[in-house]
Amino acid sequence: MEPTEVSEFREQMEEVGDKHERTMMRVSLIISVLAAMVATVTVLGHREHTEAVLVQSRAGDMWQQYQSRKVRQQELLDSSDLLSVQSNAGTEPVQSKLTKYKAQIDKLQSQLDEEGKTARDLQNEVGKAESMAGRFDLGEALLQIAVVLASITLLTRHHRYVVVGCILGVAGVIVTASAYMLH
Image (cartoon, rainbow, N blue to C red):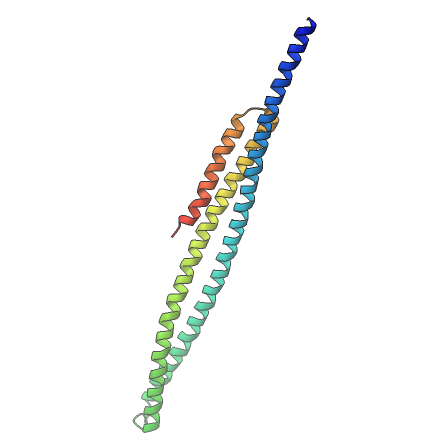
């Protein structure tokens, strides 16, 4: 090999090396962006799981309050029934007490209706939060797989892995975004 050929060969190799280095820098940037998206979706998923737990707790509290009022209402109904079958059921004090109990029973019924509706609404919120959290989890998994596949490109120098990783990354972002479309 002549000196000029050696020089040309060296320049060609440097050019190929620079091009390869730029390509690997792009792959590294893609991996970094995918990793940042994984972190973001992970946080969103954890927050939504926490929200589901908190709302479920509030719904449980509301159902306990509902049950407590229902028991109180039943006690008043039973007391009213017992008073009405007493031998002195027609007297003024008994009638006054029955009227008072009837008013309390009616008031409890309106509270029961309201609390039951609130508890059912909270249960629906729990379902929505759990659905959203599930979508965030799936999006996170797809993004994590995308990071791994894109990283394989750095080891193998085959660009098909980063392409598949990018496709899975886009799918992960779409699944994550779809969580906000739930009603």
